Image (cartoon, rainbow, N blue to C red; front, side, top):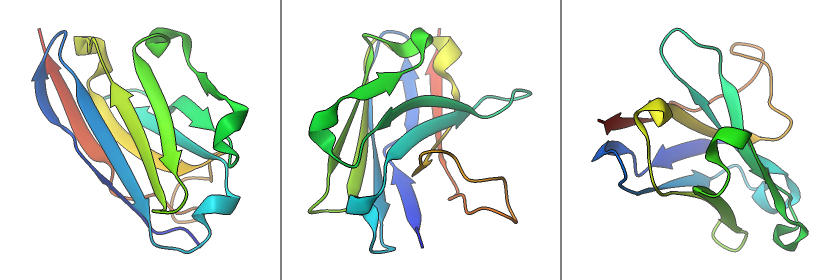
Length: 121
């Protein structure tokens, strides 16, 4: 069972950078494909990018963040990262980490509290 805590969000100006972290204390992190998701106000939650349990197998990103965001993981520390560069106001959202494929919404599936990222223009 995953138990996820995201950190590293905040307010940044357009063009700036942030690095999000997600620690899983559930004990099975290294066996799971993981993803970063985000939900902007009034919009559905979307997959930002994902990484295989085998970190060397490559990763996938949605088109709007390609070349700007980088996902990485440290299986020894049960931690997932999202490096976000060249941030744009359109990146403003609550960001979540979770397994991939995404579980259903609560209460059927587990989601952490997420972390707010706000990009000012």
